Length: 356
Ligand SMILES: Nc1ncnc2c1ncn2[C@@H]1O[C@H](COP(=O)(O)OP(=O)(O)OP(=O)(O)O)[C@@H](O)[C@H]1O
Image (tube, rainbow, N blue to C red):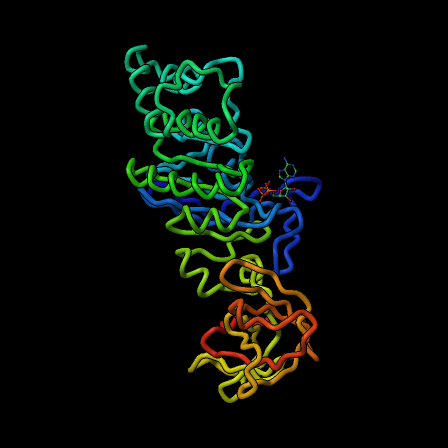
């Protein structure tokens, strides 16, 4: 295992040192609460979570920029306690690129290799090679100030890769760019890391970015790991109501499973075969809400909003009982705003979550 954190805990502020646990969650001051995280050689892992969930603090602890109150960080099996940041062999690329504004592109990228004592010739070759890799061939003499946001991002990446770090750590790598550019760059980044065999630990609050980049995503909630798994596994089977809501699913409701269906505020909803009986929370994906089908209808809803999304329409429904529902349907089948429609549910599109 290239990176292994065990029980990493960080507490900030006046409550530091107090345990204050209730057994149900971390004390309010725990920025990180006993985090165990591994990253294998050549793996791309994205840590994902809402603002304040501890993502940056975790990166800073691994980088050696923040001392943990408890726990260990191992790199290639070696405990990093007492190893300063610059001796950990990590590449860091943080939110605000931190390029040297008064140096040209080449000098920015050359910084790491020069500090490590590489010769001018070796460094120049490395700079040219990296500029080629990040899609900016021949840009070495350009002033940093003349670059667009996306170009600066590429230079920052080249600079982080220049000393051949054993682990590349990215904090919101594409945070400040517009959506179109981010979507393009994320695909390029994944290809680049694959080609180079780079091991990557990235942090982002943008789930689309994490899902496009990562081999594995790690979802954080208030200093703890809420779920870790492949993008597909996490998307298909969120481990909790928190993860489901964080992924943008809206239809999460209290339920009691009995006789092959979940009893909810919306009525009886079919659930997958073999679902254990008892209290739970239920996620119904928007595709599992059948709109306008009278045969399986259990509920009547008013169409509160329709959002056009290209080939389909997202409907916000206000039911006669229970919280609002989100549904998707084909444009040509979408009911009008204000219409009252019968609604039923598809069991294959439901996921049972632990009780809240
Ligand atoms: N230097 C600090 N002093 C006090 N509290 C801090 C410090 N740094 C972070 N925190 C707190 O620790 C918690 C985790 O912060 P962190 O920056 O790691 O979260 P994050 O998930 O990276 O958030 P964001 O996405 O907004 O960057 C937050 O409650 C934050 O207020």
